Length: 264
Length: 304
Image 1 (tube, chains in turn orange, red):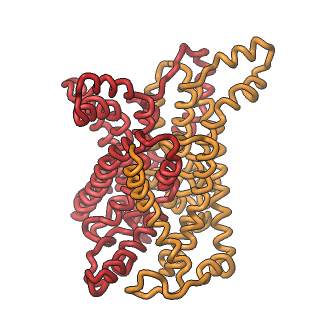
Image 2 (cartoon, helix red, strand yellow; image 1 turned 60 degrees about the vertical axis):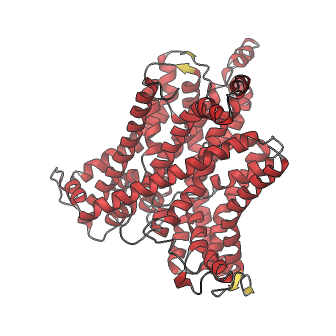
Image 3 (tube, each protein chain N blue to C red; image 1 turned 180 degrees about the vertical axis):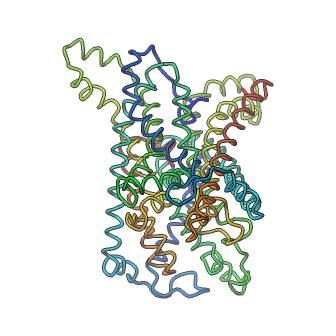
């Protein structure tokens, strides 16, 4: 691509991606911003002060709920997905197509449908309105994504290195920890990132299973949108995307360019 | 059916280490999918068929499905949802093809463009829906800019772009969010294959369009189809964006389903679940239809 067309392409991408964030940032710092003005008439930190002091506890609780749910979901998903991904990526076996279909279904069937079905059962089991219940419903779609990532990783994984380590006297545990793990670590990071972000942005299934108890950030944000305070909603929105950007920076730094292909 | 997310992966598959070891490796994953996902889905069907233990509803019947499907609003909602999901998918896929070709022709040095391009992937749908609302609302940024330019006099003159009949705000939100998803799936394929074939094409004096039509398009087609299907399935069944940016009537099916489900009248709950099952069935039917069409097209030699 020529330099001029690269500039053109880059500025279109930058403007399209940047504009929504610009509007959120402007609103979060707007003290007074009446209609025809394209720029706020008065700037201020009211919204940011509100979400750190008056509603600080609520926001911190929501962040806490979101982090616990997303982190535990991602951890469980990765632990289960590594052996499954290895089996699917390294070996041919009877019923592999069936397993593939079974894993694809949770990706295409909307979580809302599963959450509504599970709700009554989870109430019986005492899992409704608990972390465990919400993590359970998030796992149904986070796990298949993690497995597909690791399936791809193990499809390109050369197990000969393991044989060499074994022939040099390494035990099974040592081979796993010192040979396999370092080799698939980038894949594990991507799988964990996918699962974390999927769970992090989930709203309706959290609301159905978590009820009013597990108030994650999206649940709080929806409540704030109802109250109609735009600057506060904008500020919480920016808090809500922050980990996503940190994750993206991390992946760009450590995992290279195409690492996020397939994330939703 | 092959997995949509591993298309293009170069599988180094070999004979298994024995059924027991493989089963053990897959057991936890299958347990989660079968018990939590399968269980949830099955219990949804059971409840939608009228069996609601403890609520005095013990009759199995298709009454809830019948009531949902015969509701005059159902067809409206269904068509609206189909239109929004279809338009979002087609527009996002249409933009993703040139975007992927553009990104593929960029040198690896253009990391900033790659980075910015990936940003929407990690942004929750809810956040971008809120930002779109701030931009397109009657008194939003775009309307203010139009007033400043002297095109309109007041917010009332500004065309309705959110909570509108055509779902413009919803579609824009989805398009913004899904372009990078589709593009990166295409890019993964473009990076691995096709360079040599394009050179061959050039040697054989194929023009740019012919090279695109007969080399690039067949190469990216499987990934494009898989990515588009996932986008369609998602946009057909998603709640947040149409809830925030949609009209109050007609609602999209997921919003309708949740409205029934969360009704104070508990008798409406099975109808909500039945609507959820209908959404799932439509999405599954779309996936199966796509598979069948692909197979038929392949048989006739329309695609590689």
